[in-house]
Image (cartoon, rainbow over all chains, first blue to last red; front, top):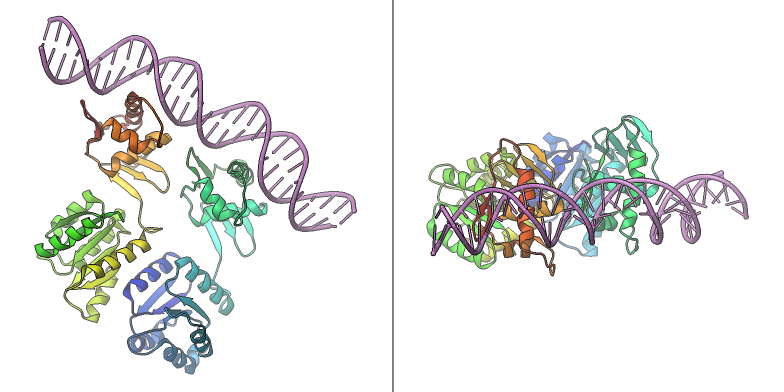
Length: 226
Length: 226
DNA sequence: TTTAAATGTTACAATTTTGTTACAAATTAA
DNA sequence: TTAATTTGTAACAAAATTGTAACATTTAAA
């Protein structure tokens, strides 16, 4: 994942959180705490995407957005608006002024990440790569393919989701309940032992001959990658 | 509400006030009156959050913060900075050094409480490292792994829970009854002598050759780390 | 020193947990 | 439709963990 993201937001704690997490995901991030500074910095930074707060001490997010759209060099800059307001009419106003997407505070980082990816994919397909990697394993979420050491591995749907889930937090141990909640569709009741069987199937597929075990069993706790 | 909070602040009256109120709210609180002491104490106390004064007699809050971020074990320790200065440029400086949130003196306790909750809520789900440390021992609750002096130690489930329990209050002596209540599932009846056997097993695993004893027997009282 | 209490150590059977396989039902593709 | 794939569960095997008894050793007090 790569790309440059600029944030205009007057709440330091939100900047802190978002910036840190975006950087962890491989983005280059810069920010301003108010609109006027933001507009200036924006030109220097030349981001691929702008996160814009609705309410700012000086200019409103809407005004900034209109300003940006006037500038030819930012004509296609994708903008995601952050707002505490949840009113429908406000949303429409925002969209009219050229906002690409919306996010209502408080939001989870996962939510934000999903929007960012979606918007970037639309505007600049190359900046987003939806690959999860761990050790010599690579999972391509877009093409739904998995490779180990360059060699493709064929997985069934459940095995794929299972591996995808583990890869979002490799090394972390998940209980069978957690796995069930995250990997199986909601309100589906399956025995927790079922997971063991799927783990076994995943292992069989992933542990190509002469490759070391990738899935760790943690007795009385669950499983993790290792 | 629970969690450990450390305060570095040179004004005794503020410590007094904040500490008292935080404890009333169920936090475990410790504090230092200057930066150098604070940095030392911090390692022992292993807090979930740090309240940090901007102006200190020796080090500045910023310097402390930078110091903390260098230390891997504190990489994700949330920091709330207390400051009398309200200038915007100072705030930005603070954010660069990795502060999570700000509070300008004078502040109400409710305000502080709100910020603490917000920061903890944000940091706890993922970012806060759930590692327990004591001496050269490290227990990773997320990955369910234990290391001594960098070398991994394999523990059975009960041994793991036992060590985890001791690590939440190392040095403190626990009676066999207390250990039973906290480490064994509820309504399970086991002989108190059983603990001796598990202690023995834990000792065997933890005391790698040429390493000093970590578990102390306190005759007629119980056990503790040491 | 002797004695009694507390703790350390060991071995082992019972229990719990996980691995593995097979198979029928359900789903999807051809 | 048929054929192929995928899925959940039961049944059994294998492995790890657990609690306790029995005996050894240490400690503290008399």
